[in-house]
Image (cartoon, rainbow, N blue to C red; front, top):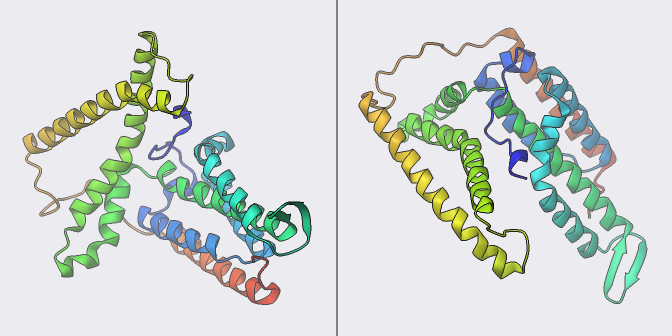
Length: 272
């Protein structure tokens, strides 16, 4: 299960998506989140799915990798779908057990929201898969630059966000090593009730916290030894620059946004 957590990982490549300006990729990711939540019927949702499929094809990332990004949240998707099935009462009743009803509208809402969440996770994962941590830091800092008027240190916020994102794979790997070490010592983490399983996690959580604090201290010490002073006077080896392909990508996303809004107006909503 831990090996399926790919959040924060970067996968090198030379695809069109890899070559896009990181600032534009960040903008397109936020725009895609809007695109996923705008559809109110299956036709407009299919438009968002097609856009995601085209984007994935342009990224040249393996489908197995994208499936790994969705796999950890399958339980959340299933729980959300079940809530929709049992709490939405519109439409034709298919099954009724006392006060509990399963209706066509409930099944429709469950499937609709499940597809929406899967698209949201896969589309958002493309940002970290195709963008290096350094480029992502520069992009976030650029996007937060207007907040400097309010005396907000955009560089430090961008640095903290990127370091936190970058350390997710490291912590996942560290957790796997600690679990393997505890199992080798005879720890049983898979049997027993809920209380026993929670107690079995204590030998994992404590070393993980200690390792995380030690790693954070080492990182802070390394930055201090290199005279790191934040963003003031900082230069960059690679400067961010936009290309025509970036603006073409933005135009395509805006066009799809307009089409989805038109489809919502034309076909209405299927959600209850």
